[in-house]
Length: 419
Image (cartoon, rainbow, N blue to C red; front, side, top):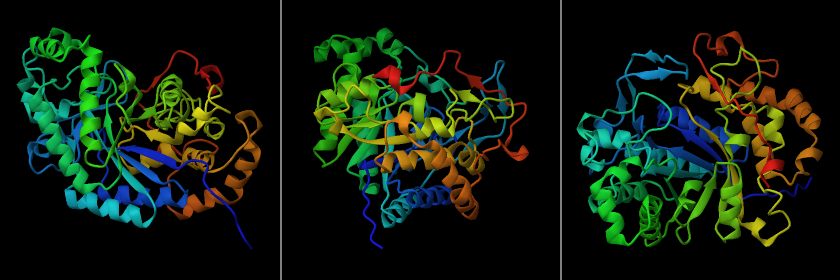
């Protein structure tokens, strides 16, 4: 027979957070195979955060000597907090990452690295206290983050910090041939900059209006720096605040508004709204779900995800939606089994959405998709050793009794309400 098929989107991605919980190299290689089996072609590795730094940087060895290890880990999201008092950590050597990149390339998967700045940087500051806002915080007393949630310790907006991260990115570029490099840019709390004489002097020196402009200055600097080396910056949609760097691409995670604005301004956009395709969010209602977090995203919900919002549909700006991505943050996914449970089978539904020209969300034949899962694809996942969530609910060994979750109080909106 002859089969004619082509992907709807060029970017069909999966983000794996290895900063909150480290996954050994073999587990990452296994996920490359699973992505390739589902025609997903981008593995976005979230390599740095408050709770851990996972990439070897030879010019700055304390990033992994200190920044890759935390003394304990919060269990779940409850109050008062529960703790696993065992130290946790690990990192990938540059040779490890080159092996991952080469293995992925053989399977037509591009590995996109993320080095988060200027927020989500406490692990780096714990390793090198001079990176933080030393004029308002005793950064020498900071440790690698052990808790989840928002963190107000951010990088100082100094030339020395910029040079430090240029050192980091030079080594990252030597490892990862991906034309696109992710620099984070999300959830940068600016309280310390407001209190910092150094940051305020920098705002005046650069002729900026406020702290949002200061973050934009830093993002724009790295956009130019990467462009001069033949690379392209992508960041979370907060990089729109204070003005978007020329040529930068946006990864839209907060509803659709940022992605719509970026696409209308001519920027490339990858859609990954947390309200639709964050796979760390719970998969069903019920007390048996392990560490329930966020909004309920069922298999059917993910199958009905539409990356191009109605406001852009049928306009020239729709072409700027270059793809979609499912994200899996690992605050409460501490090992391969937990990652499997959160990712599958929903990643299968996402893969079909990212590849196929499907009807609109309401017209999609979920019953047919479910039939194909039941008659064939669950058996394939079994053969691949994937510890997915069964359609009937978690196995007893997949549950996590006693570890509290945190569900969103407000109702989950849908794509129709964000157009």
